[in-house]
Image 1: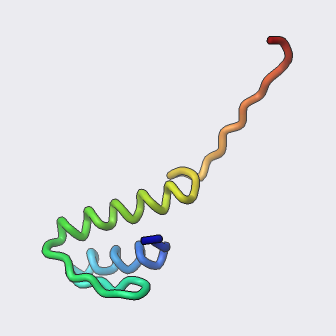
Image 2: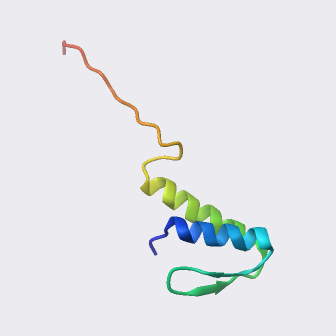
Length: 68
C-alpha cells in the first residue's frame, strides 16, 4: 500500500487519543494494542521518508576536479 501524510496524521491522532481504530484512505483498521499502532506508525513514517528521499530533506553534491 502506498502511504500518505494524511495516513500518518490519522495514526498519530489515534495514538494521541488512545484509540486503537484508525481510518485510512479507503479502509479502517483496528489494532490490538497501542504497541501495534506505534509499530504501524513507524513503518508508515519510514516509508514516507524513503519515498521523500531522506529523513532530513538534505541533499549531498559531489564535486570532481580533473585527473584520472
